[in-house]
Length: 245
Image 1 (tube, rainbow, N blue to C red):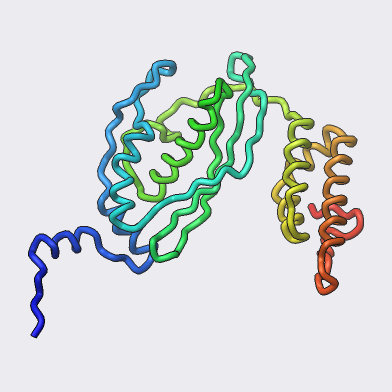
Image 2: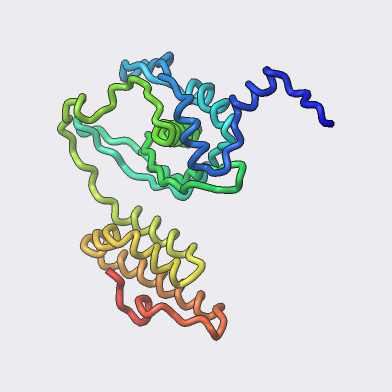
């Protein structure tokens, strides 16, 4: 004969933290636990209230913990540029590109979700600020967290602004670095295709800079082919001098 020593309290605890077998079920359960996050922080420069990352994590961490969820944030790249505001003022900004993947204790994953955050480069805290904002927006979208923020485009007046001038040299440097990190011909082709529009802009702005991008692509292709096994067939789209766009 066996004796069940479980108390009503133990059973309630088990019900509060179910063992989800899939990441989809875990996220659905997490969404049901979400409540409205109040705005306790204030941006004193622009004069608006917001919910900071600490308040987000205070809500989200226990919810994710109960449902076996945890995110991993990976910075993919960063791009610096000169921003021109509506009054013609100039400042250095950076676009941080992140891949955020939601993991589940079962081993399943969802993502990566691509996030881009643009921030002014005003000190060492800029990178941390960008990562915090990316994580906050990831959770906000993934768990459908209401905050009451008036950031809906329909609520804001459209500001007339001056588009920043295309920096062909900076774009060339970034693209060359990205192509140089390709590990396979397919990877190289994908990186080239992803940057197709920007490469076209560089080509139209400066033929010499476009030539630099081509040389890096061709050099990287040759290096990959040289190290590949005899069974690996080169991608037709990257043979010769043909540009795949």
